[in-house]
Amino acid sequence: MSVISLQKGQKIDLTKGNAGLSKVLVGLGWDPVKKSGGLLGGLFGGGQANIDCDASVIMLNENGKFTKETNLVYFGNKRSGCGSVVHSGDNLTGDGDGDDEQISVELSRVPADVHKLIFVVNIYDCVSRRQDFGMIGNAYIRIMNPSTTQELCKFNLTDNYAGKTSLIVGELYRHSGEWKFAAIGEGTADTSISHLVGRYT
View 1 (cartoon, rainbow, N blue to C red):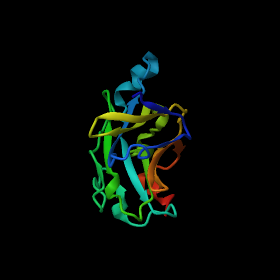
View 2: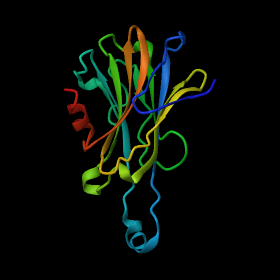
View 3: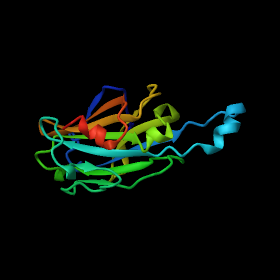
């Protein structure tokens, strides 16, 4: 079965017609853009701090609101209060191939009062390091079936995110008793996970 490649704004049914799918693995990846050489690169290239992108999940109720701290999963809280969402841990550089961070979601265990899971990525300490997503390339989110390792869909973020310090990448949400995924790819000027959460409080 070929992987479904999503465009920004597209939605896909995950569980409809796939009744056995009770758990998904969400992989997020990115790479630092290679700096060119030249005079400035030679002068300043060595002093640049690694760009530390952090993937997080914000769990919302049916009104699209964030209601309790245990519904935020990030590097400082790697498991939701209900245990249905688990973060693999923090990747500090984004170097290397494959997923940089992974989040597993046990769909059958997501509490009934949680209707939407928002996947976001922000740059740690972006203000003092003067970093933004214009310095990041090859960003993507993909959904896999962990029991078969089959990739169900992938969304490559191809917009120009220069000046943006956070990305709202995509969302898993309930619809008529099924789970769907929507590719969002919206860049924002939020400088921390708490600012991102503030959008939904």
